Every structure is written in structure tokens, then in C-alpha cells.
Image 1 (cartoon, helix red, strand yellow):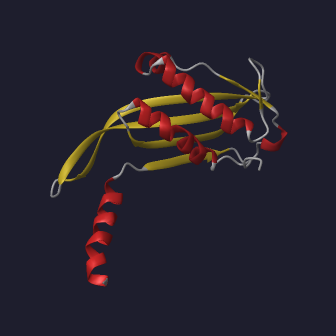
Image 2: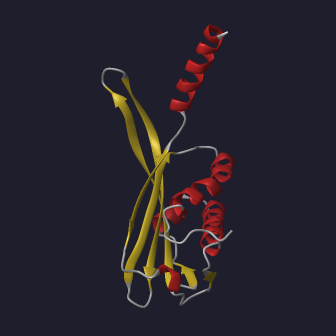
Image 3: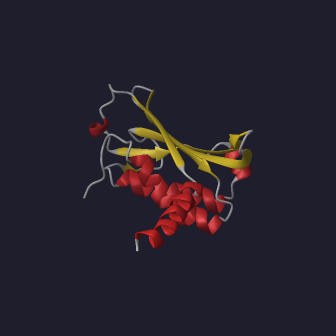
Length: 161
């Protein structure tokens, strides 16, 4: 029985290793008092983002980020929030592998969020998720909530239950 399951086990390990993975990078200002913030507003997307990503996708990204932020006790305001949120999305060509096993070229995507304290004008939190770009917009949309939830696992205030 064990011999019959071994090939299935090996195949599942190999397939899981081939799937796109996401790396998270974050930084925080330890002097910031995150529990004191009650409101936020979004800064505009960069002109580069507006040119390379559809308005529909930018809106999806903003909605998912808003949902995560609001579960942490912050309320959206059009302008003048306690904190400003900047979301940046970028793409670049990347490669994986080595000369011996061959090199796999792919398009990498990063979604970064930066938070600024509007009173002190300090950059207080940064987190970026970097991974292989999913080309199908429906599949990108389907995985967006999970991706943003992973990003906010690095935020110092956890979501309300």
C-alpha cells in the first residue's frame, strides 16, 4: 500500500513546488502608536499604475485593502485621515533557476502598501508582496483577498473578530 502511495506523494510535492509563491517584505516604525489611529484616506495611484493597470483592477485592489484596513478599526475619510495609505503595484521581468537546470523567465508583480502618519509626516509601515504575475485577471481577482490578508498579517493591529 505504501509503495502505491509513494508516487502520488512525490507528484504532489513536485506540483506544489511549481506553483507561484509570494514573498512578503515589511518594515515598521516602532515609535508609531497604531492603536491611536482612527481614520485613513487613500493617496492616488501613481501615473505609472494608472497606465499599466486597468481602472477596474485598481478599484478592486483599493476595495480589498479598505476592507482589511477597516477590520483593524480605521474608518475611511475622503481626505485628512490620521494616516495616508499609498498602494503601489509594479511589474518587472525576473528569472528563476540556474544555468545547470535552465533558467525560467517570468513576469513578477509586487503590491506594496505604505502608511504615513499625517501629524508627524512619518512613514510608519510598509509591506510588499512579491510573486509571479497571474496573467488571467479573473484569477488575480480571486486571489487578491487572500494576498491582502497575508500582507495585513504583518500589520501591528490584528483584525477584530
